Image (cartoon, rainbow, N blue to C red; front, side, top):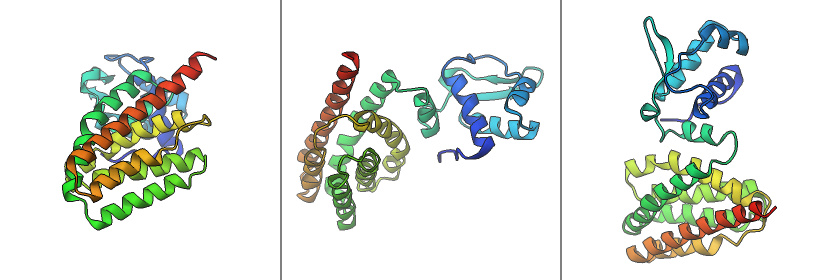
Amino acid sequence: MAQYARRGVHGQTVEAIARRILTGEIAAGATLNIVALQEEFDVSLTALREALKVLSAKGIVDARQKRGTFVRPRADWNLLDGDVIRWQFAEGTDQRLLDQLHEVRAIIEPAAARLAATRATEDDLIALDGALAEMAHANGDPAAAIAADLAFHRALLTATHNELLERMEVVMETGLAERDRLVHGGTPHDDPVPSHRAVVDALRDRDETAAETAMRQLLDKAVRDVEKVRGRRGSQ
């Protein structure tokens, strides 16, 4: 599912309600007070209903006659939706979710690299090389470093030429962006280019095992980078 546009009062209303639900401020099973929400956000009833439709499409709320609009059980939420992931990070880094996202990446990306080693086209390799170049020229700019890293991992999934794996982009990018903001947020970090280049070199050599191994090593390094940041913050 495409990520929701955040602009305007409508988008702000969606996000405000979503965050309250995802943080537990509004509990699962609770019935929403539509009149109170309408007054609080100073929006029309139509606008509020449209906002709730967005959350309904993501499995977060539902509506029934006599019961009204209520929060569905967490088991019904579309936790793989990019917006739902992003909203959970909105109040600060969610370490548990960050760890879970890494586990998902550790399952998918090494296998994706192995597949890409057999399927990557010259255009795919050019895209990956371009991401490496952007990474090398980030020069300590966090925004540029994050953009380059996202471009690399997006290009890797594209290089599998598997439409279902490519759709994992939304999940991967949301978690990866949060991880990158944590790691690149003004703290010293190791040069990311060599570990990423090792993956591209293996793809270019059509070496499936090397590609998978290089990606596992890259992800292990990503975990160590996050742990370093956690350690520095814990000692402050």
